[in-house]
Length: 288
Ligand SMILES: [Fe+2]
Ligand SMILES: [Fe+2]
Image (cartoon, rainbow, N blue to C red):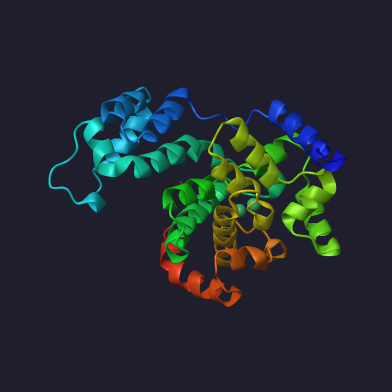
C-alpha cells in the first residue's frame, strides 16, 4: 500500500511534470535510434537512417567518428560508417549529449547557476561517472555517462515550477544545516533528484537510469539498482569538490557513507580520485 507521504510526493511530482515544459523529451528519431541499438541483431543501416532525420545529430556523429582519437587512416564519409566506428555505446551517449546540450546550457537563476554552469557540471559528472565505472567494476560505463549527464535535470524543472530564491536556499542550508536537496524537501516536499527520476520514468528510460537520477543524493534508497546511483553520487561529489557546479561552499554535499560502501570506495579515497581525475576535469571547459 502506498503511504500518505509517498502519494503526496507522487501528486507533487505529477503536478510538476504536467506543468513544466522547459525540458523537452527525447526527439522521436533519437528514441527510435536508441531503441534500435538495444537490439544486438539490428541492422546498422536502420540506426543510421533514424539518426539521419536530424541533421545536427548526424553532423555531430560524423565529426566525432572522424576525430583523430579513433585513429582511422581515412575519414568516415557516411553516417553508417560513422556509427560502426563509434559503436552503439558511444553513439548512444553522443545522442543524449547532443540532445540535452542546449537544455542544460541555460542559466538557472533560482539556483544561481550562470549560463553554461549546469552543462559543465553535467558533462563533468558524466565523465567522472564513466571513469569511476572502471574503478568500481560497474559493467556499463556508457550508462554511467548518461546517468551523470542527466542527474541534475530536475533542477531545471524545480526552478521553473517554484519561485526559488537562492538566498533563501542558502540561509536555510546554513541555519538548518541542510544539504541542497534537503532544503528542497523542506520547502517543497520534493527534491530535484526525485523530479529528474520522475522525468526519466515519463520518458521510459531504463529503470536503472531512472533510479540513478532519482536517487543520486540517496543511493541506498534506490529499490533495485543502487550501485549506479552510488557511482553518480560519488562523481557528483568529486566534481563539486573540484568546484565544477558549486555555487557556494555551504552546498558541498556530505558523502553518503553507505553509498560509498556499496561500491567499496573508502571515504579517504575521494580526494585521491579527485587528484587522479583533475587533468580530465580541467579540460571540461564552460561552453562558449
Ligand atoms: Fe543533484
Ligand atoms: Fe550534481
